[in-house]
Length: 108
Image (cartoon, rainbow, N blue to C red; front, side, top):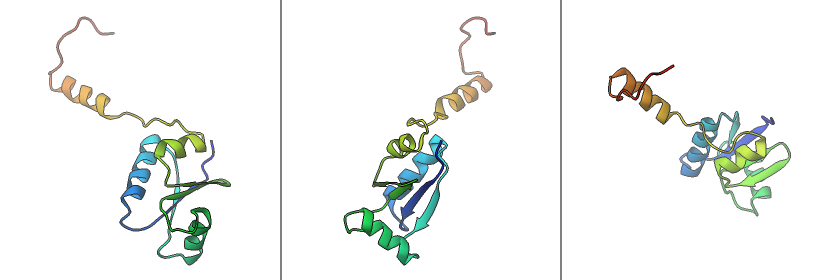
């Protein structure tokens, strides 16, 4: 697995937030560079985003993706494209603990 994932972001960017959240859910490690505080990073993003400051822009090794989905970044980095599902497991555990699940027969 390639863990050399770097996200170029800007403060307050909802697309950046969504991408970070999606990558965390998929267990993809990443670094982050704020283009507002780094003029070299800003120039780098412009060079790969057709002259614009489109964020998120992602570098995976030598490959660049502009405004990608978390699935696309995960797959390009060699991780599962689908997020780990935590909610159904947690809901079942809470329901079982609270005695809300019906008895469906013996459990092993």
